[in-house]
Image 1: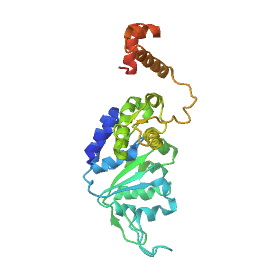
Image 2 (image 1 turned 90 degrees about the vertical axis):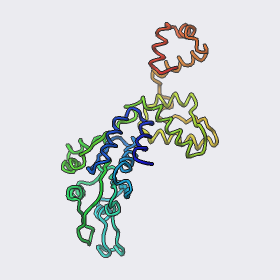
Image 3 (image 1 turned 135 degrees about the horizontal axis):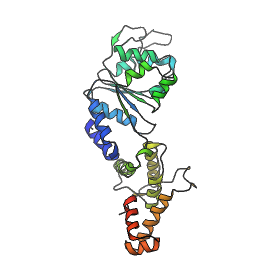
Length: 304
C-alpha cells in the first residue's frame, strides 16, 4: 500500500486527525528527522511506518528498533554493528541496525527509554551522519530517522532524564497523536475501520457490533487507546467463531462501574423511540419532556 493510501486509511478511521495526517504526509517527503509523540497504543508506530512509505525512501529498507528492549551495554553493537573478533564471542561480523537501514528509514521506538550514557552516541549519529562499527572503520549513515516517544518527552528534558541537544535534533518535525479519550467523536469511525479490517482478515462478511456492545464501547474511555479497541474486538471474534454480530465483553474496570448520566439518558431515549416506533409525540410524553427538548437531545446524542 502506498504512503498516501495508508494515510487515507488513517483519515477514514480518525476524521478529526485529517489535518495532522496531511502535515505528516508532507513532512515525510523531506529528509529531516520526524518525532511522533503520543500515549502508548495511539497508533504512533503505524503512523511512523506510513511516513516511511510516503517518503522518497519507500523502496528502501524499514528497520524498527525498540529502544527499551536493548540493554545499554549492547547499544553500540546493536546499533552500529561489529566486526568479527571485535570482542570476546564475536565470531562473526554483524552489520547493526543502522547499516541494515541503509537507503531507507530507521524507526526509534520508545526513544525516551534510551539511557543517558547512550544518548551522546545517538546524538553524534544524528548530527554527523557517521558511525563506526566496533572493530571497524568509520562510515557514512545514509538513513532517515523517525523517533517515537512519550507525550511527556519535553518534561523529561526539563528533569534531566533526556539530553536537550538530542531532543532538539529529533524535534525538527514534531507531531503529537492525542489519546482516543480526547477524540471520542472518532470512535464510530474507529470501530467501523477495525471491524472492516477484521472481516477481511477473518473471511467473515459484514462484521458488526450488537446494540449492547456498541453502547458500552462508545461510552468507555479506552485508556489503552486504539490498541485496546482492536484487542477487544479480536477477542470477541475468536470467542464467536462464524458469527457476524460481535458482543465483546466489557473490560474489568467497566463491570460494576456507574454509567454516566449522558449514557443512561441516550439509552433511555433510544429505548423509548423503539417502543413508540419512532413516534416523537408519544416518546416525548413517556419521557416527560417536550417534543422540542426531545429533538434537541436526539441531535446532541446523534440519535436518528
